[in-house]
Image 1 (tube, rainbow, N blue to C red):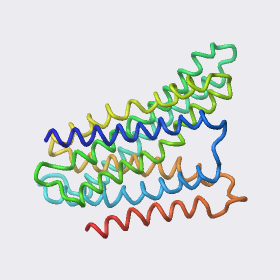
Image 2: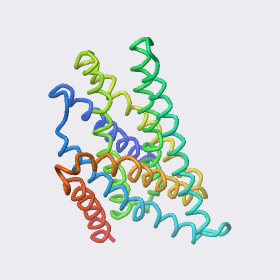
Image 3: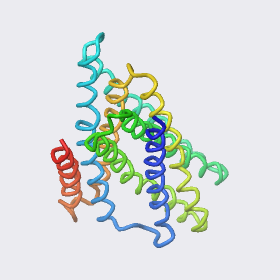
Image 4: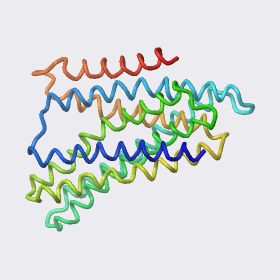
Length: 265
């Protein structure tokens, strides 16, 4: 059982390291290549949409059907909607924090920077929970290659979309005159909450068996909202110059996730 927590911790440390990698772009250039970021964001969106069904929703429905009590369709739908609402509320808080930072004329620069880092950090909590829940579904004696790869793909999808988030913190800091070192440190700090949230998610699923189908659906709802509301619109920027770059990233990401599922299923 401890192996599950270790895997969840390692996976979320991996997603945090990708955030740090994105923040490290400030060391090399002030603005990352737009086409590359669009392709990466599209790929992450495709992986997350596919993983939301095959790695989260489908297992949630199957496990809910095997349990007595609440109908499976209510558990899956309720968990999915709660996950999306949770992400929506966190996004509202993030937006409010950013707006207050932008409108606070004369405020100390340090307060503005702290607010920016906290807003991204808050956004990373449900993402860490999603990874932890995915690994929490692995039970001792039930760690098949299919289930393991499903959890890994959730972590990969979250990790990929963390890259531009790290850059989204460090690059604006650099533009405001902060040193490369300080910009990097503050950028990577926004992802440090994910390992904590990941272990908590795994703990909840492992020790509270009945919550597993709901938790899986919850994570799927959170991932779908992130993909549809943030990643897909963001990767479609500059569509006039690169009309199919982001789209091909989405298709490729979805295809990779589907290939892994069919190959291992």
